[in-house]
Image (tube, rainbow, N blue to C red; front, side, top):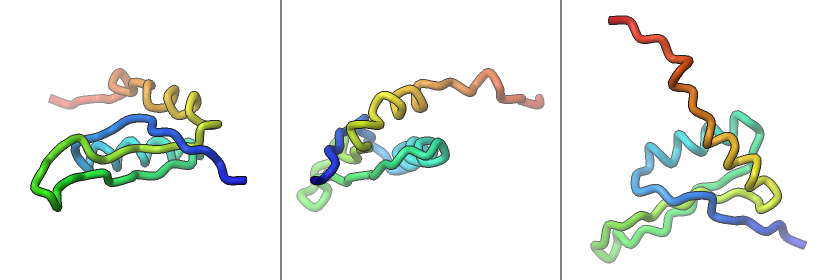
Length: 76
């Protein structure tokens, strides 16, 4: 029996999708990027899906909801 996968979110740029994928991977969450672009047809639309196993959906949502901006130190 194969595991069911769900789309967690959709990105319109590859860098943003890769950052989210990296955050999940660091937390040990299995994930994949699926390109659904219509670029070969000349259409630019939201097209990169971040998918996770259905069983890990809630954990993945929690990881991506974390805000680390308060932990960053900026030097003027």
